[in-house]
Amino acid sequence: MVKAILFDFWGTLVENGIFPSPVRQVMFILRLRMPFKDFIVRFEQVMMTKPYDDLNEAFTAVCKEFNVDPQPFIIEKLVGMWNKNELLGKPFLEVVEVLEFLKEKKFKVGLISNTTPTITRVLDKFGMNKHFDAVLYSYDCGLLKTEPEMFKQLCKKLKVKPEEAVMIGDSIPTDIIGARSAGLKAVLLDRRNRREFSPRIISLRDLKSIIEKGELDEFLSHETELNPMGTEE
Image 1 (cartoon, rainbow, N blue to C red):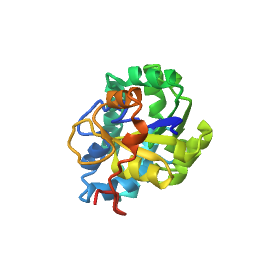
Image 2: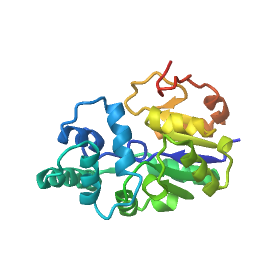
Image 3: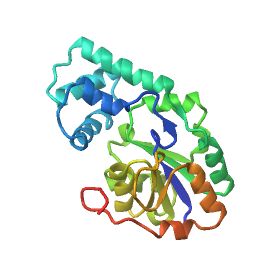
Image 4: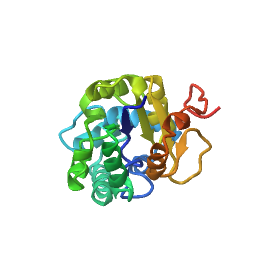
């Protein structure tokens, strides 16, 4: 029986304020030539697993990780881009409605994110903290969502077993693989309706509808098999 619903933040509950995503823009600004899947692992490990004093310090560490000279104009551009995303980011239209619905249905609601401390300002700006029973951020715990332990820690905070929790996120490598590895069920949120995957929704209202119909367990039972690289077979 599902007792808790866990959510990713950016791309799931809150839309980016800039396009392409800020993470991809970091790669462009640093002029890195490597597969994005290789970049993102190293970037998040450096940027999002410790609480830096400020973004200047964080992006200086990122530059050093990728052997880029952290010249002031590069750091300034990175910080400005990151701040613009925070400034313009906002919750998707259905988010508050669905979060309130889940609380009405007595689900415990958790937030789990690979993120910098800027997430707290976005949550405060839109008054979103009240919707969550527990939160866990990578910079606070030193873990990333690719590590099952991060999901297990949030389940402990929510006082539920992993098998009693469902993860909702827009990334297969970080949200789906990590959650499944920790023993949770996981649902892909595919807002652009481009992926062949199961279980999958294209809006959080789909989740609400499934729960209202009493079909959540059946919906979760159909899982696309994944290979070790975190992509569909």
